[in-house]
Length: 398
Ligand SMILES: [Zn+2]
Ligand SMILES: [Zn+2]
Image (cartoon, rainbow, N blue to C red):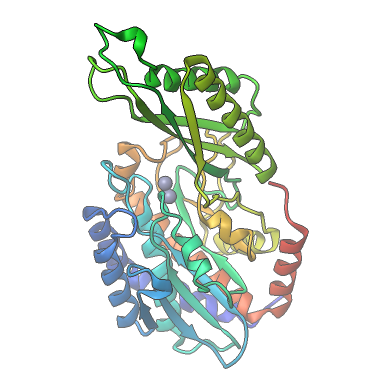
């Protein structure tokens, strides 16, 4: 079956190829200047300059977030909006170990190539490139959703670098939770029996969580750090705190994890004579909802540009993303594109190196092409968008 988009696709692919050197440069520049959540000022400026230069209409600092942006490639009047999402924040201490420099430039490259190749899109509606700050810990997309940036978006898509190309992989929901223990300070040597040791409570909590883990579903994750373990050894700690992420494939099991975590924290407090305060973060990261229609279109475009999917490696577990929240609000995909060899873990120094490699350039170019082509497929076919909406309402297997 031919579509009115088919003859346009080679032109868009060529436009990405023509931009490839500039995109790689931009990707390396962002990689060389890692900026943390909500502080991605340089990346914001460079990406918006690039998008403007190539003919998109850019709005800076949208949704009340100074480092967010939106670039629009208009079509023929009223119609649907398809969004391509960029991330560009780095990780503390290990820089672009999640490869968001590749996400940013693949998304911006898709928008720039569409604008260069077509000027105005020959279909009703528009394509937007939305710059979404603070994926690593700040849930920037949730803020942008609350500010209404996704209100008129009919479908959203982005790519994420990984050691293998997979259109669909689940992501885990997260509840972030803080536990604080309150005891009583005293001299640790001369009056220890007058103290209540809040460090013992926090240690007890970690032991309880370790025991709990044996009975958790295999995909669930509970992991934490002690953020306050006392002041110095000669004082019985009167205050300690720990932060945990509770992760699961579905929201119901997340609530169950929180219930069990709460019980473990209360048990630790009781056992040590402390009191406890458990504070879950109000922002819950939601798991990705699958959209088969969007996924199939994306996979077809990957095949078209001769960048096929890899088999599931079966080795790695799942991560999480604030893109999950977008996927629970509207049809969304978050495909993974190979930018490293198999088995290189994300958030490692090794992955940070691969995020600036020739393989990352190849992934960036393929990602930009597949995003641009898939976004255009959706504008060209109201039927495909309708199917994507149907998929969304049916929900998908996790
Ligand atoms: Zn990450
Ligand atoms: Zn990431």
